[in-house]
Amino acid sequence: MDQRYLTYSSPLEGRYASKAMRELFGAQRKFSLWRRLWLTLAESQRQLGLNITEAQLRQMGEHLDDIDFAKAQDYERRFRHDVMAHIHAFGDAAPDARPIIHLGATSQYVNDNADLILMREGMGLLAGVLANVIDALSGFAAKWRQLPCLAFTHFQPAQLTTVGKRAAMWCADFVADLRELEYRCENLEFRGVKGTTGTQASFLELFDGDHQKVKKLEAMVAEKMGFQKIAAVTGQTYSRKIDAAVAASLAGIGATVHKFCNDLRLLAGLKEIEEPFESTQVGSSAMAYKRNPMRAERATGLARFLMDVSASPLHTAAEQWLERTLDDSSNKRLAMPELFLTADAALLICLNIARGLVVYPAGIAAHVAAELPFMATENILMAAVKAGGDRQDLHERIRRHSQAAGEQVKTHGRPNDLLDRLKADTAFAKVDIDGMLDPAAFVGRAPQQVDEFLAETVEPIRKQYAPLLGQPANLEV
Image (cartoon, rainbow, N blue to C red; front, side):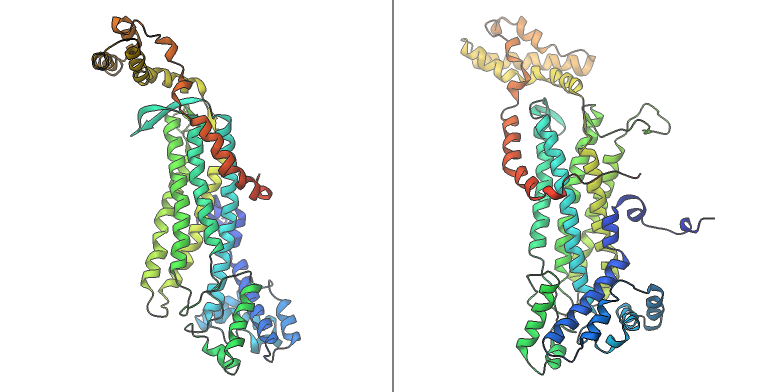
């Protein structure tokens, strides 16, 4: 019996999320980052005059990644404290440095600062996928910028738009998500070197009351870890409102994914646009003819989970007592990685879909033709008035003919005969009705809006993220 299949594993790990995102939130990356934070702290303390030797730093630097996880787990069983367990495991690997590892720090020095780094890198990974989705959808929008299709309000035929304009609307939501992530990354503050309750008292003691050295220490560590901004004040932890804000940004991605994929599911039902469907793919175990939109459905389900989980960090932020309580820890271990892995998984599905969208112009044209007579009535009315007709009388005639034609379609399942009825009405004899039925005349500025959106909004994003464009979006399952 294969032992791998005896216990639960998250579908995000084994089925959905990318290798890069799984590794980012994996144990190796986390605890290697802790060791780098300890090394950076010690290096900076030495530079500022503490009695730490080059040999100690060198020994720490030689053991940043060779973590003995079994030994760390043994220590944690003894101490019931994960940070102390890893301090001891690191000390075993670098025994000369044992006396100065974690000097003056509290657990949240490594926990919080590492989490901020991981979130920043996670948002960078998501930004790369978003840029690729935007690139794919914008290419699709450009290709179909002129193809007229029914636009809907309340899922009822309204006026005409174009396939490209609708795709540009999807794309614009993903652009908003990218800008939100960029904002979060640019304004993410390092927790820094704050001590047990955020007062920096332990570091002030180490530097004999020298406030400037304590401030310098924090600035040095932040800069070495790649942060320009440092939280001005904290308790033991950085404010959990930061987690809540990041979670809200990821939930916004969930809303965009949900809207995009729900629209595709509706369009697939109308047989106008479909997601990719592979030659050997099975749509239904019972109904062999079906082409279920399973990718869009999967992404919709993940997006719903993403939006739901995003509320948890907000509750955690509200729940923190005074300088800190520990009830954030277990929740944070679950919520934040799951948010990132779920957003990653949902976006990868969207990228896969966006690169393989299938359009059925004939089906779209048939739907347009069925509804265009109703949509053309306003133009027909104006033309008949210009030809000398009475606007109120003409409007009433169109109303009666429209109701009668609608009954033919809805009650009897017959074709829409509104145009034939209008042509037979002498009040419209001077109007070239057939000449007013070009669908392209009813899409307004939709093609031009697509062109302007691509040039003004998307092209700068393509240039900014050019090195990341073209990343694979193959789905394993």
